[in-house]
Length: 76
Image (cartoon, rainbow, N blue to C red; front, side, top):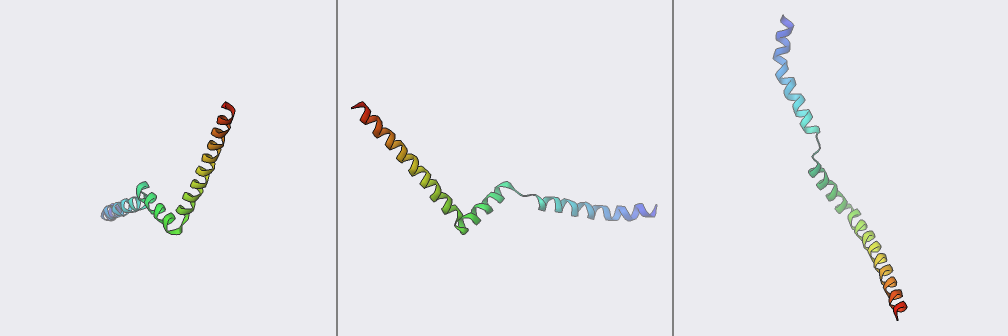
């Protein structure tokens, strides 16, 4: 019976600690995304990604313009 009294005294503290550990271990997706975004921005990776996307966009635009020019030549 004495062991039950010992456990019951420590149970609330143990429960509180477990809850705190569980909550602190959870990653908020919004917070994590903001942190990742900031790290990418500071490291320059985000700028490199933007430049790569611009290169792809320019290549796509050039292809579309070449196709339009070919169609205009064919129609004349």
